[in-house]
Figure: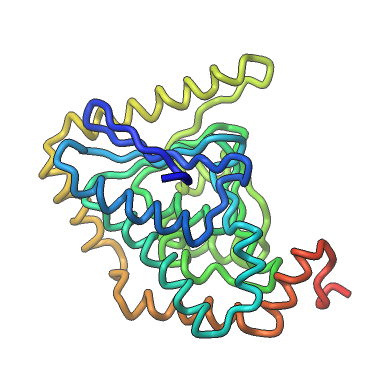
Length: 269
């Protein structure tokens, strides 16, 4: 797959996003590749844990700009079909029978927040930042909302969904969006930070691999069954409809176009 690479060692599969030049932003091809990778590795008997990683300075910047240009002219039906694929990717990660760990080496924006939230655990470097930027474009984080709200909490989601403020890794840790933080020494070799991140991720995956595979699988399913309200097909359909409607709205179109044209949207005029 051109958009990502996979590697398996010691029962741990690592899926690495390799579009560093595009800040690992996703489009329809990337979404399909990620979905396929998690489905295949989730059923692989030799795999007991899956790490989602990325190359470059950003973990995931959300939607690819070229993809956004295409979406600007989508009909409601095309937006629904498009959002359904994103919803399927997130649900595939969230319900993957193997435990999943997000290895966050850089910034996480918009749809990238959904990738992190859909994973069971997340580890980040100190210099990474997080942002739910959709309302700045006249959009809403509808498709990722069921996962982000579960990971971030409703109270914090009220703030960051509505303000689109960027927050740092320390705040993400405090809110429980990530589970561990790796210090970043800006004076040291950057590779040392990545090594420290790898060590922390390895610490977690070692614990996962050392536990009973079926017990881990059952324990994960237990959380999915018990925690809050189950993510049902009706809820997924509701989020798909939500993003389809907002993308096709006048404000949604204006927000995306103003972003692509590098100008202020009309509601700031």
